[in-house]
Length: 493
Image (cartoon, rainbow, N blue to C red; front, side, top):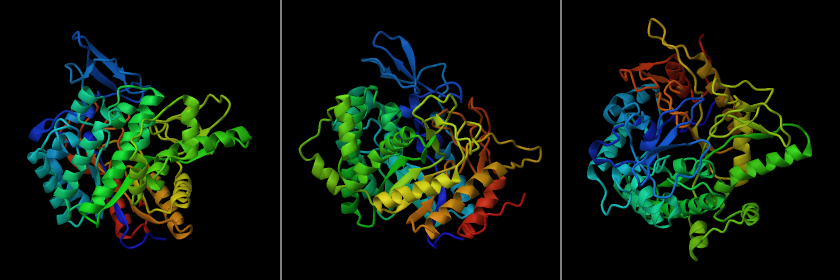
């Protein structure tokens, strides 16, 4: 039992959740910088000011429209976790050395768009921001760690929201393509693996997170994601032109969906729910809108405005690989059941055969094998698990140790199923980067106590703490897993 030689073992992060330095080095504000902390029971909020000067907030879940004329901004009296994150901006050498100690073959991170183009529509990029990522990539390459870069990960320059309405405006496509051209040119030879948008399907649930869209209608979300599809396709084509070695992929949030019962209505609902996830990858892998989505738009009265050349652009800009996050599975029922559970911005009916995390996410390693097979059979494109992990409360013992056996058990279960997908089923899987390999801010709740990492960071939900890094028990365990290419999963409890 082992994964192939050359398999990309590593870890995953996002700039807005761990980088910090939110105004350092000429960086502008992004959408993430105006989202407050929250908790498992209290929604994170977007802060904004109305033209009359009155201050307001809007919960990110459930998402409602931000009023016309409002300006999203930073306000006194709120804690914004993105402003400091875990301060990777100033501590990247220390963190990368720890990744190297674990034996990482790759490291997934994102570029903060507003660090390079503070307003999003700037004529020229910010050299200090470019230099920062040069330094980060050089440090990774010093240890032979392959950078895997998400171009846009839950952040959009705030000026693009205020001035254009975010991705609802077609002009943002050109700003994004210019940003991509800057990345592909500047980091040619340093970065080979790119992903255009993180969890692009989140546009259907949280459009402000996904693209700075302040409207919540089906029409607005459909139009905004169309612009992202076109931008992604243009980026794929441009990436190949600038460097034929580039591999430009997509990224979606994904989980196996089961029917709650053998009632045909439940089975049909499971099919429809899965289709809704596949829509985003269908467009980016196949290069056209699937019939089931066009029918849905027809029923909803949604009319997506497309330029005459968009169909050809989508066809010419199909991605090289498919990256996805997988944390849990869910059940769906056509009848009220009354036992909902949580998930990655989504919920479903509790599965009586599964245990769940403290945040209600159902733990299902077999579901990962099912997801891998489903995506491979559908697309025949290389797959990359770029997020997977267990959010949990970690306890620091008196001797400083952190015995996170629950995290080891979770990841081991999922790696076993990855192995089956590759070695039993023949799935082409190129890598695995567990989420939050170093503790960072939770996207959904804005908490620090919901920890995923192999590395503990001394910081709490209110922003207190020394930011000191320390190794958890899972650190040495994962180091052993990587060294054995997944063959040694034993946990010496």
